[in-house]
Image 1 (cartoon, helix red, strand yellow):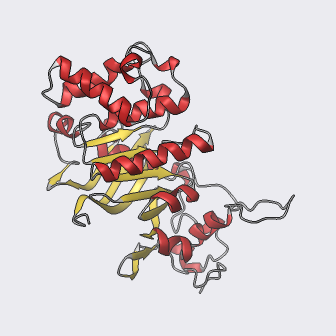
Image 2: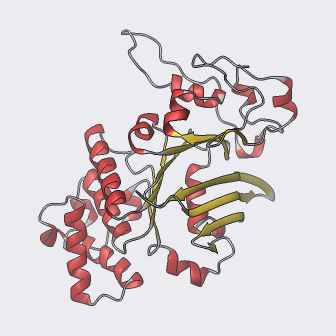
Image 3: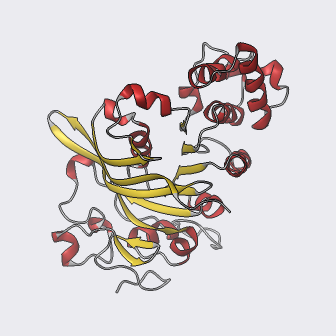
Length: 330
């Protein structure tokens, strides 16, 4: 069994960008923790703040906006850490897999060189040892003829193989935490399953924590231990995957669950949550989900609910939470 002491603790994380002098709050009061060997899922529609949350943890978002709150990594606050110190953690202790490998891999450099660049920056390995490690990592992620493929360029790999290369680069320096930003979005179902199985296998083998961003609740059910549901930059529901998916308490989580087709007769219209997520420059003063919510009450329009305990491991931000499996409100 893994030690359940958190290795990453995010508390009250806020990230704000600016456009023409107007503040655009992309992440608001986000809090969660990740232990060694744990897989945490961040779920929500596009624009809910999932990717910005990962970039804020890595220190990438502060180049373009203001980041506040606490991101405690093994006793150190990454939000307050100078860039020079943070670079020693990025890629070495905390690694990230980005959403689209063709925009992350350099098309002018060989795969071998791109893996070795990471090792050169974060390890003391010799040139020969770096090459051996690069071959070992390509073998580990399931790329055949690894030694020969070191000389290939990204365009010579398929989409699934490029994603495997991204995983190899991210894990080459043996990080303790992996931030995976929708690593299977552009892949077909079979390759998705292979990539997810690979990440889970490596997380177990390397005793590594994982934060997995996805919009696919099926992926969450199969891979994650805990889940945080995000909407309009905030976490609206949080708990174990078993509890949240079996008994969702926030109307938005219920809507996401109903949007997953299951045992439907042919030609049955698919369910979708009414309306669209709010723009960052037009966020409601109350609950951001209120304009789309069938369980909305007056309090939802007038105020913003806090993320509150409903059990030891369950949190919901809602004035009128769901009380049964059919999605009925209190």
